[in-house]
Length: 94
Image (cartoon, rainbow, N blue to C red):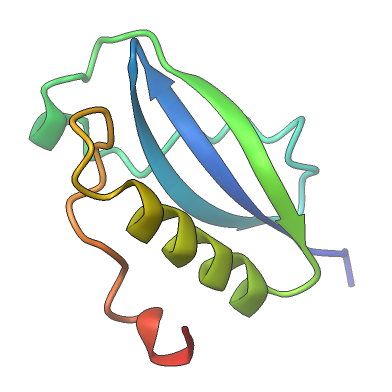
């Protein structure tokens, strides 16, 4: 079985950003993933996006905990594009 890579990322769109979590069989640096596709909500479908790997974790749960912490820390900033303080499905263990 291939190793899973669990990481927290930040998608940068100009001066704004979106914080997310991802699990992939590809190393984070090589993973082409750039968000869930909610670009219509943000009106940024055709905007240039760059991804920064914020942190890597041994488990998905640890990655989700860190994602939630970072979202809570940045929520309310005009630069933060996250729509919720944390994902309700994930917050049970935060």
